[in-house]
Length: 607
Image (tube, rainbow, N blue to C red; front, side, top):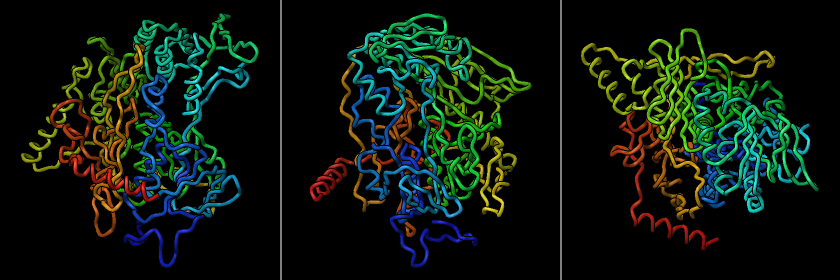
């Protein structure tokens, strides 16, 4: 549904207008996790809207963080699907296998590679990213055995080559390269890791944290070379036999793996008839609106404004893409009440046997800021503070901190004087802290009669206006009408890192089973064991519980469900202790599960 100029709810199709094969209410370019999540979220809001995904990818949406587990044989290809097979058909999402060449924003259509046009009501650009790969002028980059790991096909190629590999060279200084090194060590391959900079992840780790990670990788069996670059790849009869470094050192190997980062695919921004602002990604506001009306951007290609630095930058992580997909689905259907601001960037991952958390900008040095560090409890923590405010947090160690609570503290500019020691020592109890804050807020309300509020970070957003006669003069302007709501954030629940020990066959995993389409309250997906996003596996959460009303299926208050049993202990996410009123997602009874199985068997038998 949309709102007309008077603010009334109006159907997406008006009068006698009918959907046609060459037009859709919502068109999404790209079937990555951001695109498909946006389509499913939009369908939950608008049961009758026509939704189409256009992509030139030849396989369903892949759970990309799980590719590292696939590389070491812990997952099968079938277990890599982000959603169960047939999700698009069940959600009535029209799939078009084609490549989009151009956007005609004035006529609201996209031009496909075959020259045909496809009209849209609202458009989502979710074209993702592409690997930077090795320099095109690098000698030997085209030899057989030189791989760039990014997509499923790259990992399939790697798996086929593993039995023939004794030594490998990994190029790159990021988390992806670290995961690849550990994966190759898992198979007993001797690994040479080449890092161009003096430290690992120079934008996230300082020298102390980097050395902690690299020492662990060395102990695992890898040879680590810092401040080292490849100047040439040596081959014999077309196959790799080694590399030459900038230190004139020859390293023998049969495999060269490039993990040198990604860059957003901004081709459509350059091929749009109205100026679609882009720089290191397509620029969007905190509601994912681009500089062109009715065009939204989500996923790796979207450049959001960092509220601490004012710079536009992509957030190329799986869980960020899921959140952006949800927001895009809500915005494209006019449900702004379900939208929450993103706040500061954060990243959680495994680096070898250590867990890393990066929130805000802990390596920056703004005026008046100071740094505190600690190396107790087998880890390392770096806090960047400005007065009583925490503006950056870096943690590295065997345990993952309560990362989303720390993000909330930074986003809402909460004072940290009373919890500074716990944050520094890695002993911060987020549940106790936020419960105490709620108590103080309630007491102040009773005794003073005034409503206490927590200040959200000031974020300059953009707004879309009707295209003017001179579109070249359009600019990103503040949007005063955008509500400032509490961020909806995923969990950072931790799973074991990659191990160099023997491969253990994975236990059979039961995929979520879609319920019959007629039961709106139990529509896709039904997930029992895992309902939240893990930054380590990319496990998707169940969609918010739905309710059937006279206007169709809608989200229940736009909030995600709490995880069953969260209140009884175990690792908790931010929802568990900041919004206890959220309902638990219902489990299926054995009778309900049998009903679903019977329905699916009948459905399969009728095809």
